[in-house]
Length: 183
Image 1 (tube, rainbow, N blue to C red):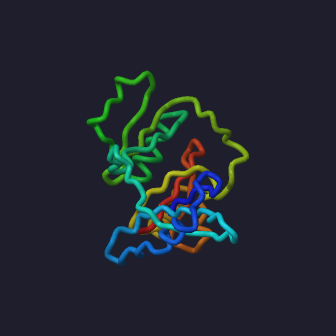
Image 2: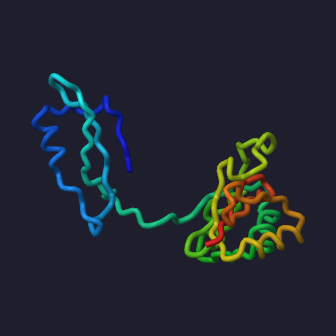
């Protein structure tokens, strides 16, 4: 539920507060996307009123996440990690020669990672050991234990999810944090 600051909302009169309380509660079959509006009623006694109103859907048509851009210092080294170690496939339909830097597009399910060989503005030191406490990209996988074996064999450092769910966090050769969560 999205909330807005009480100070930014108009105050309800006693009659509109009663009308807000009389609004029917949506049935279980109705869409659950509602915005909560909080207002203070004026009058002899102040009270907190909660009213539900349908949330606005974005009118520009969000479909899905298309790709994630990841900066790398050395494209070949990153390809060895993403393509060779993780087994991601290159998308040959994406342009690599039309951009002013080297890069590659790799499939992750129906979405992509765009590796871009550019200077990384992020520090490589001082980052949290656990990638879940840093900016990260999450990739859904079928078997965390199999990936753990692959990382162990390759000598890749990782941490397991702190919440106990089946997920593993690692960093690519450039320190970019990756989460792999079992679905």
